[in-house]
Image (tube, rainbow, N blue to C red; front, side, top):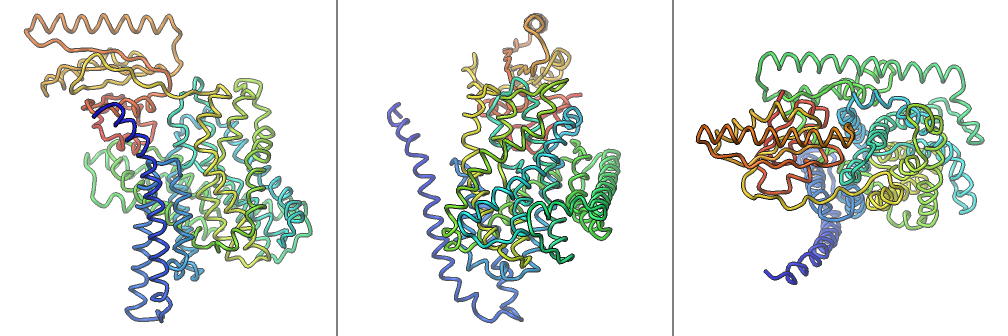
Length: 595
């Protein structure tokens, strides 16, 4: 293949990917039109009802597979594609959309699993180090976002002559106030942060504010629907939060949620220890793992606590260890392949496309104001106190946090729940909310690397230089000097498998100065030379060593390095368990954990 032919293929490959998306969207439209008459037939009882249920399950499962595979090679987030397919398949998904009970059950179940996964995604050790900024932006920032959105949307609704009640406006502000770690994390993976704290804050608080947004929306929804309150203004509605009775109810809800979540963690903890003693995994382990978020939500709700908070706390406190990591593989596939596509497909199917286009202008205006006015104000107001002292957050870091604020899964669930509340103007408010979600998912992820470079808080991970050797290679990863003690174990493995190539991937993550780094490199050279000298005396083939020092986080560098097909195995310390094991599994290279 010539260089010009290769270049042309690279140019045309994205075009083919987008063309395939168009083909699938057209096919989905045709499929929806053809199946609509069948769904219109009587399905109240008998075999037809069963067939329609299986039909709906098939659409959701196939839709989840398609959106993931089609979006992967493009800049279009899978969530956005799922919403579009849901809009097109509106008539095919009508049996779910028109059944309020089923719709509520599916979205609540999906949200429970997603929040449980959000807790698992948050390394507790990192969370503790930055607990002040994280909780401030997650709680104070979420409240500011919700209130400010409601105030601005009230003025916009009057300007655009939209008939929306104050209650619907407040609900929408609360629902959109949280961010989505599932949208934020992928946009940060290709970046190297000299100070990774800003990345840790963005990811950790996005998981927590999902819970805060859900609790806030639930409180407002309860006030509006069960207490029959008709607020006269935004201030009037938020004034109910200061009511002693409401404040006590909210505090009780949070305490019960935390207590039930801790109980769920205790169950998982003892299960993990029991499995460690047995020294074997069980085929039914995933059943217990999936049952915990369901039970936590159930018990907390029965006790009038926050079910969403309970499932998040259970996931946050529990740390998956290697001997039980197999359950996370199943759990993540359930979330990514079923629950998240389900929610966005249903969100899209809940929308009347014609009505959506009628509010396009106010929707886009609110989306722009949300991203570039409301979010930055909330970030600066909630984190300004941390611009001095031990954290000393810079203006550039706060500006970056203001931009990395995608709105996604949990707001989508809350908007679907709002849609069945019957509050005046909630349908129009939901359409505006969908525009905001779409814009944050379309605009922010692709521009995150550019914004990071402009603000000088991060830069793109540099490409790996061509290696000095080719062929099957074992990689030993290290953040400090641990590779000096672990090299013998790797060499033993190399000898067992007839390999002679080993590379040390050293990522100090800003823990050493230049003098110490130079000393570590010298220690590595001395060690490698001594090993080969001994091997030659024992008539063994010398090891082809390579020492690769990289900036940025170790796990991010591993992801880039394993693109080399010659990598056969990776050796890491057990501290890699601080990071999500599913990400390690997805690298498609065997991992060996060294103590």
